[in-house]
Image 1 (spheres, rainbow, N blue to C red):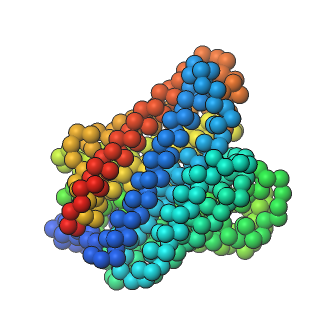
Image 2: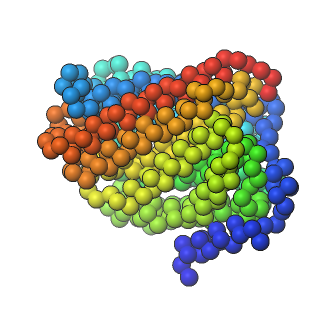
Image 3: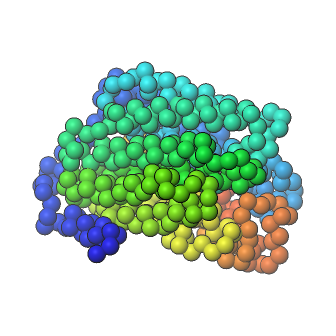
Length: 470
């Protein structure tokens, strides 16, 4: 029996109602608590950094959408600005936001030890984010649109990357030392947070290893292979922490865990097994070589099915909260699962370098983003902020999710008609009606998603400006 088949059998065994090891009452009593002092203070700080990164990313996203929307692209000739804005937009919305919110989770579930390391990491990450945001306004900001972490060929931008990398490295190292559960199979969400930190540790190690070993070649190819291995590994961190957020939201909505703590801990373990291949790949294949890149592509293709049992547990959790009252976290859970599932399906439909590729990763990354948005709503009052209330808070995930859904479907449609990725304006060569319709959908969905993102920022800022006792 192959390992993937074994993983799916484990999912059935551990989620089967007849094999649960704890009663619903005892599972429902497992509420995630955040310790006072350093955990709350650090989580608050990292949440502020994540929200600020989204504000900057959202402003740039508006210009990105306009630069690719038929009709508007001719009124606003933004082709040259498109690439520089795309670099900072991606790095703020994916690298900084994801890592900052991961640090929120690690701070919230971890102990209060090593506070100096946590605050040092936050300070460096915040400084690096500020420098990164202003770097396009300085001379020599030549964009290189490689995958995972696009860069501006500029000393100031690279300084920002190193500063952010140092800050997030300290956060990851502290997470590994403070999130290990006291009861190995009794605290599944804390164990999931630990495995997320372990994935981040492997990813940072892969980045450094590639930087040390890959020879300097043509710039575009160099940065592609430099971030290739670590970028693939980061996807495991995001996916694991997404499920942590799903289960946390379900418990917030008053629903018990879908399986016993031991079962869920085992599923997190199964989902993390592909990480063991990362050092083996680096030890056996030279970083930057074609076999190296092919192996990481296969790790993504064959490793993510190990997440299947955990995603199934998330689906059962979503089914369990279907009758829960309207709540911003519930809205985010529904939208997150929908977009992540769509992104996963599109990932197996990629053929060639067209816009099906951004359709895939927009669906997947937006699914993660929505799960983090939902967990942010849950954590706001826990961290001493006000509660996310009102119609705007309830509808925000649906608006953002619907916009991204239209955006993703438009990209997927256009990719089927040969529209290439990483181009803008006249370079898109939109000739046929289906091409124009697909990219028009992309533009409309993107604008709606920007509105949804703005709604999230407004809801958070309103709640975060109302400080209460945690």
